Image: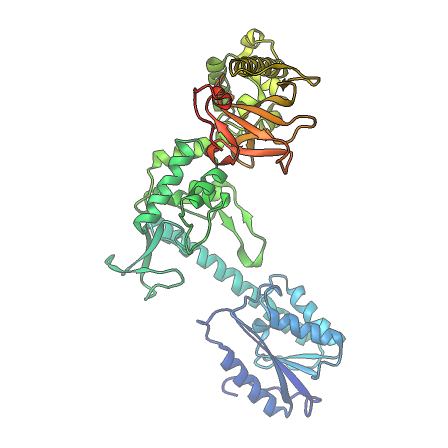
Length: 513
């Protein structure tokens, strides 16, 4: 048995056995084949037969999770009559490198409780149940756990050193970037494709801008977010509508767009240790003071100024930059003369009114913090009063258009309903722009009880005028409301016009279905 001594314990002869083998990576010395060969020779020396093999190839020994071979073996043992009486393992480290040695002993105890013995073939201790045997076994478990802990620290230190030199410690490049492999002397070797490894251990990897189309997409994302004020979800929808993919044919999502806007590698910086998942522990976000950063490690796709602007916009929209948010409220008040929820919710680059409410207790308190004594000079007209006034104005305009077209008109029994020529009923409605899942537009009333048609005027919050007019037939409506996008209202499939006169043939515009 080479340098190892086989302990021919009494009672093993003639028993059937299962072999359990494990290997973390394909670069380890103790490969699966070597373990099986050693276990086979051990089984022959003690005259027992290996009837089953459980494998965990490329699996970490830090936890029982993601080890289907060990899990299956424990399940077979727990069900009873697994078809073997022994489990042969190369050594304690192949059984596992559990950081809690009691966990390693617990899984061994589960097998022993069901009459299955665990035998470590290459270990110096025998099979006698003595205090010395337990001491040696616990020492081996501690050594196995400590090996993983020391190796984890060495890997972390090596990655931290590589970062200080401007090299990427590991991981994928990300959309818009590629990994460039450099020789030890700094000369370029090749560009690594996804899944490829560097050719030589002394090679180093740096990031470099990728294909021109991906670089252009990254810059477009920053432009939409910072200059146009689009949200991550709106940006993703526009990218998908333009046929731009997120790599490998994937669609853009708000999380993928957010990853582009929040990762400093796109402005040339490398950041390490933001998230840790060491020694099989839970994935956790580390505090910013523990992050390791290397500024200017590679050529960025966007400038540091653009990245800082994106961060500032994100903090403002999330309500973390309170001073900037209050300044934005003051700008809206100076432009419009009043503040309300619907007005602020339609304004790009400012948190939603519910976020403002959580920060200040109420939106009114936020307005007080922004305006101070000026809040007493805000118009007293409520949103409901403004809405009623706008509907009344529209009703008078429609009344005038109907009379100019040569038809009779009178008020109906319901509020804001007109009766044309004593037969047709027309309901007058006004809709202000709102947000539906990140998209701006209008919910036009498609059905209204007791009326034949609905004439709906569409307006934005920031402009005190109507932008479009929509005519809906309630008889043909399949739903209560119809969504009309502010970006492409002409695609709503309804009678749409930019002027009110067009619906009555007065020549001020043409209504198109």
